[in-house]
Amino acid sequence: MQKIKVLVIDDSALICKILAEIINRQPDMEVVGVAHDPIIARGLIRELNPDVLTLDIEMPKMDGLDFLERLMRLRPMPVLMISTLTEANSEPALLALELGAVDFISKTKFDMATGLESFSDEVVSKIRMSVYAKIKKSTANQSEQSVKQNLSYAANQANWGNKLIIVGASTGGTEAIREFLMELPPDVPGILIAQHMPESFTKPFANRLNTQCRITVIEAQGGERVLPGHAYIAPGHSHLLLKRSGGYYMTELSQSEPVNRFRPSVDVLFRSAATHAGKDALGVIMTGMGKDGAAGMLEMHRAGAYTFAQDEESCVIFGMPREAIAMGGVDEITPLKSMAKQVLRRLAYSDKPNQLRA
Image (cartoon, rainbow, N blue to C red; front, side, top):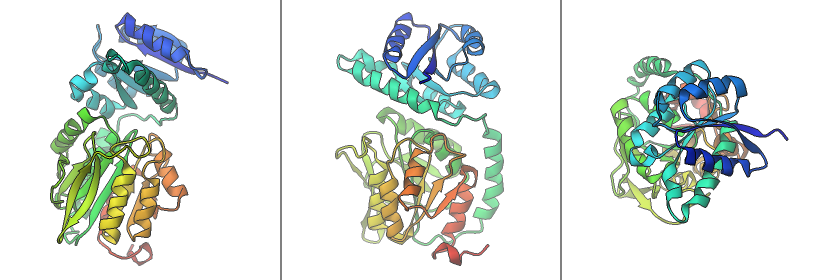
């Protein structure tokens, strides 16, 4: 069996030693090199051709984010950010995801007495996941152009009725959600989103999206009336559910046990939408590892909701959409670049797809 080749890039000798010990204990991976700054790393990448990089953010000679931007522009490859910055200051981690990093891990986890095992498990599982990630060059300019193209279509669809959009994602989802939301018009129906993300990141993630999108994006607080032109992102500490109060849709938070190992769970959100919105909901499952959301999407489908899955080619990880498709809960498989347009088109009609006009 060919092992996963990992290059560790970090200015801390202690961190490099810990990561090497964790990785080299695994039968399916090995550290092939260590670099204490990005300048050294450039030569090692050419020499060793690693499968995955682990990358710190704060380093001498060149900032980790500057290095990541150049790497993704010139030689895209799977990068896992491992840094103390990621929880103390989430902005660099969110920017790293925008630049193309697959995921991030906080070094602070192994500072706790019981945290090393959890840190080790997360490092190993995310390295294994990163190998399967589809890495592409930045398409920021294309996304902006897509927004301009789709808004002219969206502006003609003024009457959404009592519709809602329900979205679930995991690995790669922060960028997929950003691209999707940026293409939506200000009067789009209310949107509820479950994205697997640590507690300290969901509010900064929502705030960042709010500055980039035409709609209002907030971290859900629970008890809010779901309004048109608003997206509500599940906080990292709670499940997000849809409820009804009289004639209104409302958000609800729950700290019940994780589902599919996650809280927030996509399945929990999707099932609540199936129960309380039925055919008025429209479901979207995006890139992510595992099966969270597949069973819930099937329930939405059976309740009359129209459902979309992101296609394999545009996913970073095709796990969650693949599982939803396999269970039979998906009506339409769509590339990410077309998702917003297809969702807006679907919202303009209340019947099933054979009654759609071309």
